[in-house]
Image (tube, rainbow, N blue to C red; front, top):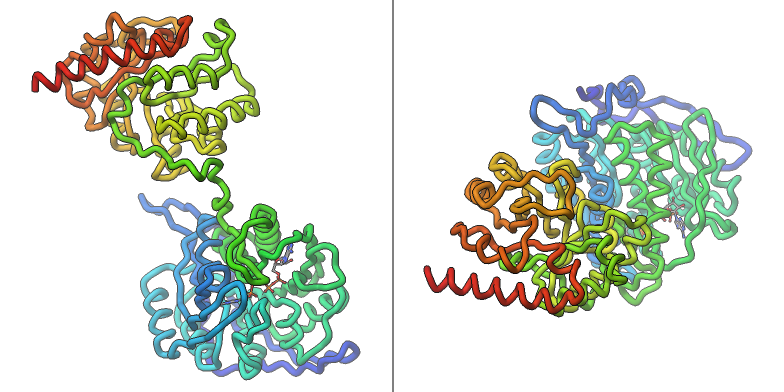
Length: 554
Ligand SMILES: Nc1ncnc2c1ncn2[C@@H]1O[C@H](COP(=O)(O)OP(=O)(O)O)[C@@H](O)[C@H]1O
Ligand SMILES: Cc1ncc(COP(=O)(O)O)c(N)n1
């Protein structure tokens, strides 16, 4: 259940009188009606609560400007929420023509159209948290205040965007009174950078941590429930220090200052990450700590990426842009025909013959393997990852897909083409969530029920066996050719047969007469032989012949 908000009056009775010098801060303080609401008495994490059969997805609505360069504004909010696993709807207040050099133009949207966007979202979707960025006009601020008074939300995060990192004005000083008198008093948190904090406080100097502490307390006196003063631009500080004030305690939140030009949009991402964590149900201080860590991690990851030629570059919220170790080599698209001769490695056999995994994989590909799986049960993770990364490079250069047995983490880390999982490994749908839609997932099935399930759960192919007895898998059930056929018939997925298959029985397997049986997976008959490439070549020729006979017979 969401906590419901008290309706908010649009006329503002919470006028504060602040005198902005450090000695006298005379404050007449009226808290907003939101003080009375229980927006932070979280009944249960909003995230992933099962309500009947449906998941309640934490939802942030971002009310902000569009940054054509994609680093800040709405674009930053969308990426941040996606990275944090939270749904983000967007109400665009202005469209900016912007890049890493600066802001070349600002087109403010008509306030009635901003209102239309807001109502469209709020009237239909259950928004947990509203996060505001660029509010470029008093009219748009009023529209926002009106809308959030009409619809229940759990929290309001205000990032009082005024000037871009490049120094361009995004909201002029005419916005300050409505910020001070109306928006801030309704906010659960305000996240102001040094320039914004100074502007809100009528131009106070912001040069030291003590100035930031003073500012946090003074802004708090304008009515928000919490204040974060961000020190990204604090000249004298070696660390990136932010000051958080919750009305009782002051916190100095410090992280390493990352030496990079790619800090465009950090403020937007910080605020939307706080909003995302609040939407999941986090208390305020932990939401801020998570957000700060999120920024630090993203900046470390992105410190050397090059997008645009200006002074302030964007960073990578999703930590994905560099994750293509072999970017010059195209990923293999999976087609069922690739299952024809499926080579599955075995570390014991490589040890026996004194071969490295990479040499074994190279030889199998040379002989004509059409797909390779690394099935390494003895290697430590580090060693396995190194070998897998090398094998990905080899396989990709030859257009042969490489899958990892069981280890989704290794597959992700080395950017393999996918995984092969068994019935007692990670569930297929969980593996799919982790791997995304592009990776190949193969599932071992021995029964028609398992085969049907694999199809429903989003597998790409089925590995079916043991067709014959084998000593590469202990206690393996032998299902024979009949079992193989019934599995094939139970699923629309392509099937590869496995278990004791070699050049003397491969043709009989391929001749069972089901169109979705696409090939054979082989371990010993390739890797427990003196010359892997010769054995692979022989088997490939036999399979081609069996295929030719089948196609000729059609
Ligand atoms: N170079 C940096 N290294 C680490 N953290 C940074 C760096 N620059 C900014 N931050 C952090 O990013 C967040 C946004 O801060 P800031 O850049 O001051 O906001 P804005 O983008 O609104 O100007 C803060 O948590 C700040 O500490
Ligand atoms: C549309 C829009 N919103 C916010 C910012 C602030 O981001 P930054 O301070 O990093 O320039 C921006 N530049 N553009």
